[in-house]
Image 1 (cartoon, rainbow, N blue to C red):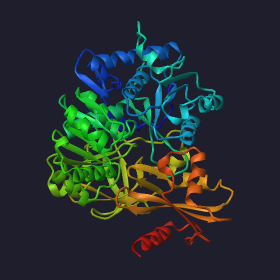
Image 2 (image 1 turned 30 degrees about the horizontal axis):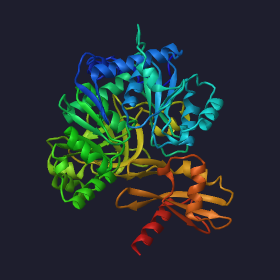
Image 3 (image 1 turned 90 degrees about the horizontal axis):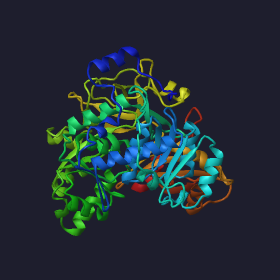
Image 4 (image 1 turned 180 degrees about the horizontal axis):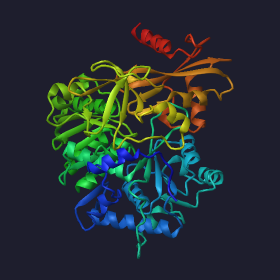
Length: 536
């Protein structure tokens, strides 16, 4: 049994193998190659875990999951935060050929149900410290609704579901059964612009290449001490080069619960961290802390700061080398595949003002107009791409795929970009109906559909508004039967079980919504209203 997905055409697959991009190795190989090493792989609070210990824990958990009847070709839903067990679980599932969806720790009932609906998981692995699993109410309802779930493991559980006990139990004569390298290894989450979060199947071959190549570009090696302060399940924190790049290079991942300066600065100093990855709002917080505390001394060991997830303004970019005192690398990537980096030896002008260029010679990237025709260099239009690590279709979404890909298999990401004469990309905005709130992606349609469930709401439109710290925030415009306060709207949405970052930052009740000539809500006009109000 294997997980269905859209494959690359045979001619391209042959080309990618010939070029050495695809090496037909399972992702677990990056760990097993260091299985006898006592070098430290992960630092999580007081715990320092060597490669030997990590590999052993992975085998133990994989064997436990196998004994519980999980089989190659099945799927799992995982929700773990920035903890060592996230990697133990990921690699254990990969070793037995079970493809996980790694939900973010900020996700709530709505998101978990949407993922389970799509993959029919055989296993659920989560954490009692998450509000949803603090008692058994949600767990019981979830297992009742999704009868496919046969195995439940929970961190911080004292009973039969204890994840820690499964990790501690010796593996015995465990034999790995990973899926073939050209099959699905796991699913990434799409930021998407539609109501249901879409899943991105990633194969061993494509993902392993993305990690290997990222390591070459970013020069990760055994001396790399990487601070993981953004959610560990994010594609950026996993593979650009992320924690998996560090494991491949035999470096050390230092885990932080969140990117706040109070959390991160002591960790950087204590463990002599030399690389960190952040989203722009966190950069602002770090700069603010340095200004308030009057010193960047704790960050002395830091040599490289990667910034991605949302557009970084040139003003903010220029402050990083000046005030944090390290090199900046801009990262512009997507969970669907394509990753762009500014290079470590690029000119200051390129590093501050662009989002880099594609990392692979076979990344094909061009800019299209609204009708799908190529635009000349320098003009702004839709990003189109395909390549050896860019997927060919969302999981079980034929309708959506028909509009997301052109006839030649180029993916349209919804980003508006321009490409300069040297091939460097500048991100100009989004075409799709999506709000990027400090690196967290909000699909407007999902929130609008939930708002319409409220008995007083007749019409709803969610739009972005500019914000100096987060880049964008969200504003909900509502046509209502009776007045609603922002606090009531947020309470209602919380009850629907959505992640906190998706709650509207502002709520406006209006008599009617402006429409375009084809009768759709004119969001451009709504955004103009907001902009003129903030200027006025």
